[in-house]
Image: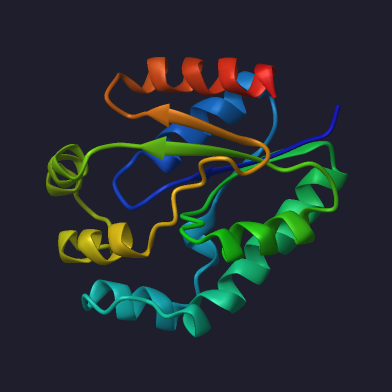
Length: 167
């Protein structure tokens, strides 16, 4: 069965870690969505400047193209913030089949702690508040599994898998 999954949420929620583990357990490829950002987006974020919708559209189109390719090839897991419903709808349209979202949900305090502890990432802690302000929580949208990040990566991944099996 073909699968396409976006692991979504604000910076610091564990999209890459959970996405990699989820893909491994499902035996399908994982793609880091941040690697699809144009250099100009990375430079803006690294400088502490929030992205606009206009900045995000070309990036989301690249994520959508990879989703479509991965779905057609049999399956893919991609990490992508997908903060707004309009972004998620654009990804759903691009996928070419059913698209599941794993929404990694956590408190601002926990996210701050995690972002403060990580090294080597272009996204500064200062942008967390703007991401949280931009986030439109996907409650009630089709194909969404909400998973609390107040657990170990293995537990988060296990909860994501349980949620996916219930879709």
